[in-house]
Image 1 (tube, rainbow, N blue to C red):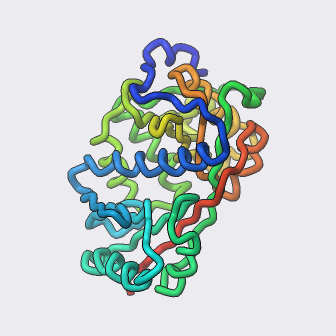
Image 2 (image 1 turned 180 degrees about the horizontal axis):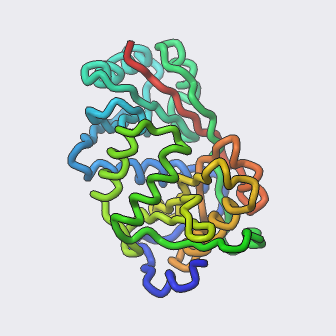
Image 3 (image 1 turned 90 degrees about the vertical axis):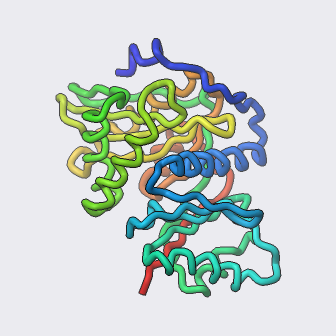
Length: 283
């Protein structure tokens, strides 16, 4: 499946995490996600902002995946006004935005303040990690199953044609997602890498890895609806995590969807905290 890819892989330059203490893992899970989002901001269509209280990305694209707030550390006084000032940035552009919370978010009850400010709780996402030396690697994908790394524009286009409808991207956002990922570069030498699963040659599932915070963060895991419940997602996830291990990583991380939790637990992932996403939509 990924049999020859590791011949061209590189060990990420950052030191790999080996401390498996729960608090260390919780911090690494969240930090990996933050670093991945920060990497997007090299795209000319996205602006990165940051201060000592939070980090945000903003574009003119009216789809929340491109407009985000994360890494929030607010003092106890003035939380409501800080939220209002932040939302004003997106209101001025007329674009919706996601506000992400995680184990290190402060205050810990920020979600309640966000709801009071009019944001909608969009998703709960457990923060999970697995020891790549001890995961359950048993898989039984259907015949005709194969996996390849995305290394060129054609492969990325096919990858996006699977991932974006599963994540309910409208066409204009799917095209922007393709432009962004293409601008970041492709291939085994990158910190952000993408993988495409095929069944009898047809693209059916996707996954990505981001090497940061000393771990390999799994994201963009998607299987087309007509091909679910055939062990494709498990086989792709295990193969991609094996690739992370070959690249020198000890720990795999992710923020899980509700749908994916059972699969990840079977592989060996454990929960180390809670993540959540809140969405603001212009009126």
